[in-house]
Length: 240
Image (cartoon, rainbow, N blue to C red; front, side, top):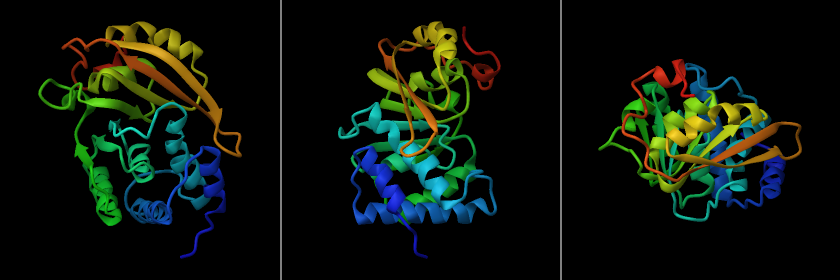
């Protein structure tokens, strides 16, 4: 099938991203697999071509506004779902070493299908809960960057994500709303977890009225061993 990639290329140009034809093809194939698998499992409510390209792919790549993607960084995407942002970041920035973590095994099967089909290397998809893999001896404090587009308040997300980040690394949360109030509520939790709020990068996705906010939190201290708490608690009883 022929796809019109004009808008996608314009959006990428707006973000100062230049992809090869092979990478463009990989995104198109990713889109096809997403729609195909979405027919028998719930991966995304957004399936229309133009919307997926902007609201999933371009949105994922907007990380470039807050992070130097040219480094060979280790990245974990917690609660990756259908692979946003982690898998999209890997396609656009092959130098990144990416781990995709999700608690639903059928999503992991889908992600592995995409990874194999696109011939991607230095990327793995892991089935598990964020609370479990952040334990000592697993993936704790192993990554330069943790990203998440998961829908949860910032206190909860910080408890899931900051334990994965090395001291000196960053946790970047993708948000679609203004963050002043949520930041105030989460400030103490972030400090408890060894983090320090750096900044919010606020913008609209290219040629749209879709507001986005990248919340950048630096890891300044080791996370206390008691965090994250046992499964379910970070979302039921967020740290205050």
